[in-house]
Length: 128
Image: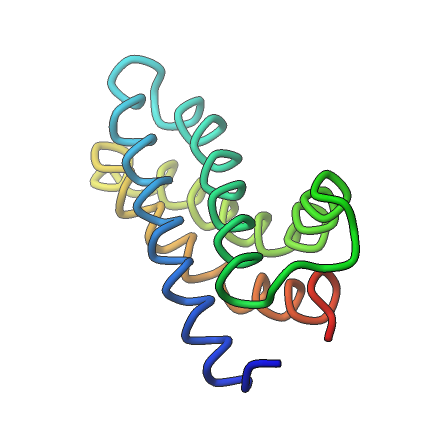
């Protein structure tokens, strides 16, 4: 078992990588599909990357099968997802600069969901 500060540090590091994946997909797809559809494709991609990395480096594998664990991860992190995407949508709809550069909204949304996702991941998905 890792200490709480060490786990949070690893979780935050994985989150940065997830942010980079999300931002890259949003930025690359926004010109063609717009920021809303780009985020619809980017977020699940980033969530899968963070699940895998958190499983490998932050918490360790649970006793569930990969498919079950992934489903638990996605479900447990749904409140973080709502916070993340709620902030994202709010900013894209209300700030012209966020609409033109959705990476700003991705960053703000990522911070909003991080704490909720850490708690859910630690105590629901990857329980010690």
